[in-house]
Image (cartoon, rainbow, N blue to C red; front, side, top):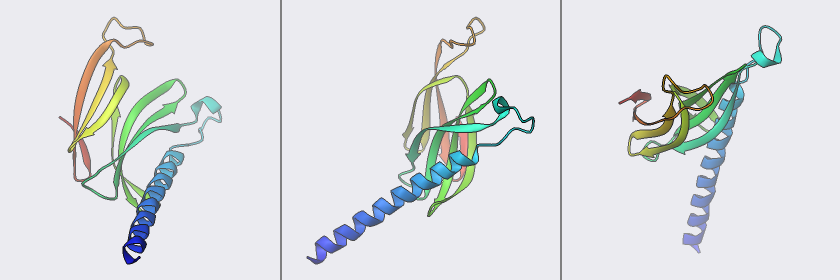
Length: 144
């Protein structure tokens, strides 16, 4: 009976950690919404969540893949967040060029597969397949 109680406590604790992380990530995305100074709706900045990747070896840290958008400009970004309860701290952010097809964590390496633009590509359609590696080290994301 004691083991069942301990197992239930552990499950509740893990559930709370996931709920807090999800809440902190949502608060981060909401914080990217900034009303425009011009009053035009098209100039409003906002973020759209695409995915999250918890750092297995660093509890309290999560990678957030999201899209930053304002007017006709959009950019994939990856932000490393420090999570404390349901609060967040932005530790590092990188812009990821091109059209992102896949993003994954391999150890401490963030691997991004994307399509990049060649000089002959129209704006709609990047065609060059690329893989870019980023090292997650401490509170930084750096390209390798």
